[in-house]
Amino acid sequence: MRRTLVGFLIGTLTSLLVCFAACYDFLPGWARRVGDLFHIPSGTQGPVAIIAVDAEALQQYGRPDQWSPEQYAILFQRAYEARVRVLALDFPLPPSVEETLPEDLPNGLMIWPAVGVGAPSVQDGRVTFPYLLRPVSQSGILGHINLLPDSDGVLRRVPLWVQLGTETVPALAWRAAAFFLQAAIPPPISSPFQWAGFTLTPDEAGQIQIRYPARPGSIPTYPLRAFLEGDLRPEVLAGRILFVGVTAGDGAEVYRTPVGEMTGVEVHAQVAIALLMGDVITPVPFRLTVLMILTASLFSGWAVARIRPLFLVVLALLTIIGGTLGLTAIGISQGQGVDPVSPLMGILITTGVTGLWRSRDERRRRFQLSLLFHGRASPRLINRLAEIPDGEKLLHTDVRFVVALFADVRGFVRLTEGQDPRMVREAAGHHFSCFTEAVVEAGGIVTKYVGDMVAAIFNAPLPMDQPVDQALRAAQDGLRRLEKLWKENPRMMRMPMGVGIHAGAAVVGLLGSSQYPEYDAIGDAVNIAARLSTYAPAGEIYVTEAVVASAGKEWTFEPLGVVQVRGRYEPVLAYRLRMEK
Image 1: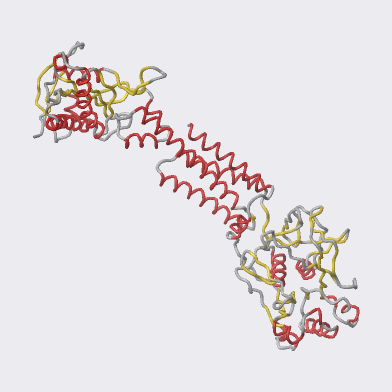
Image 2: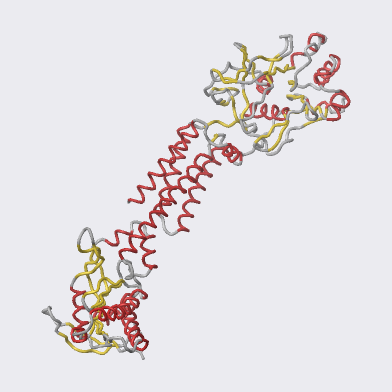
């Protein structure tokens, strides 16, 4: 429970931090670029075409701001003859052109460009420029041609209106789409509104986000020369919105978009298609983004803090990330601007912070367990305890089935009579170490040293597959280690030992003083093993009927009959383990 609460706490704090950064646009620039990777391109086609003022046209006709009124008149006449529905210019006209054009031109199909000049600002939910450049006459229809990239230079949103004082000019593409549909354009508004049968949701700056095509150049594009010289079939442009813009040379504006680079005229044409077909991205309510961040962070914190082992943690995190990306893809495919970056940042930060806490907590717990079982349990067992969530609960007192092993020195009082205590201590330490090492290698825990006895248990605090067999192996190994010790140190005081083993229920856990507890086991099963060890001759292993019943087929036992152990009313049926040579 403690780990779960810590994981949830870290996840909550992380989500609050990420939500604050997202709300006030404090996210780093790379976050937007990562978000662009989730842009689902549009496959929508619309009645839009482009006349490109390419390098050949610039060389043959010059820049549009240098064209004569006669050249513009030819341009408009060709559009009229091709039955173009709407003609939109994506470049400023020379100031004198409109005044000198003949009055009989088909002005009803044209949209004059207006350009915002100066640094734009956001006021009352709309983009405002210090002043506008536009044709002198008011006889034509105006549409602004400003495109405002984000701070990282990527064009993701386009403004629906620009403003100068009280005068508002709609976007060039929006004006063209409205003219095509014969639909009215509302005044600037920063809340969702219905237009042409679908909903537009501008942000606080009056901008919208569109779905760009899968690749630049998806809109039909024709060179200016072919258009002016009548090389195009009339039906190619009939009934279409025709955008005219510079695509080469110094006058070409090139923008980076989520799907690659596009010229300004391509962007305007794509915006017109999006507005005609309703292929726009609606920002989701911020509360939904908060919910996604909170959910992803909470589950990430819980997974890292709680789940073991590591590959399951990785699997859980991949599931959380996959769910986040799946919701993002579904939302964007439905035209909803779901933010994938903030939840992913929440997952990343939560995983990192919780991982650091988990590592520190496991080091602390491993250190505490090492102090508790120092020299009396294997490092592998200590690591397993540290890695188990809430592993401390396994150390709480509980009734467990255990196998108790006691190794008792035969004739300890007689052996130590009149001996130097320091020599006795050294010899006892070496002898006890033989059994301690044997128990530890077999997966057991040495619980205590009682006088001339070594006490150990198996199957606690972690369960074992074959605790009885492991205890028998530890007993045999301990006796062999004694023989090896005597051979290597012939002058050392010998302390022969007998072993008693019993299996049964016992109270196991941290016992003793609350300030200085010791991991131990108490109960009748432990007492029988201790008493039985006092009857076992030196080098012999005595076991009970419970051990014989649970032992594997590899062991051979000889019945000894009934043994009346000290302190018990009921006798014990004992067996001797036949030692392997």
